[in-house]
Length: 304
Image (cartoon, rainbow, N blue to C red; front, top):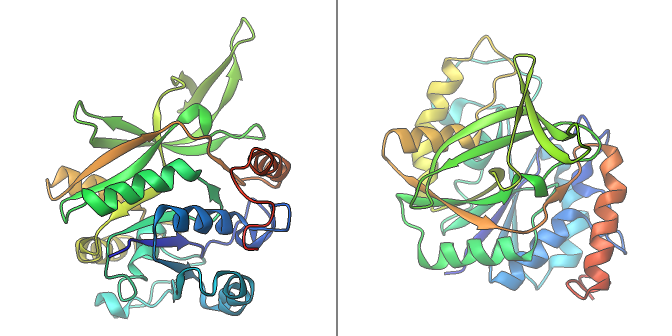
């Protein structure tokens, strides 16, 4: 059974200023999503599930179906505000959906095989898909999940601070804790050498370049739907008065680890991650993709 690629694409990209999920970055206007799917096909994935808002559906199908037909099975599921499927009868007013782990739950009827979850607007690199495919084909169980661990120095933007999930990893290579650092950036030291810091409580703290971080690239079995659904109900009912509270995948992971219900293998990669947090990041992403095309990593036109 081939694994499935689940793509989180329901966000509104407020800092980017437009729908970056469908913005063109490749030589022929390819989206970042297309490079992710191309790499996943090469790694042996058999299906891609787009998690989107229902109002995005026609646009997504028009963009992706002509290119992917005959290459990989596709499906579309919608992240909504309806809480009734989780046994919650009250309405909780919100301006945006409930976060990444809630989004994953939208795929519970569409995914019956081991799968990985990625962000729509992140370029993870070929090696990441090969490594997660190997894990999903050979090691994943209902109590052994995984995440791809990137080096923090390969994930930062030159155009502003970013949030990163900084990982603690034990001697066996398993995740023990994720520390959400909301303001991480490059900073030159007194000698002019580039370093990395994060801010907390008005102070700056250094981070080592090789520190592993989560870029929201996870590997699961469908068991995760059952495990996280009850957590979401509890989370939603405890945040009825907080319209900005989000139910992140990292919250689920940490609770499963704490309760000894599952472990998460941190699969290291040396790949350069790049994404588009800010519109100023777009030329950098385009330059990196052009470089990969010129080196032969990708064809000039992905789908010809």
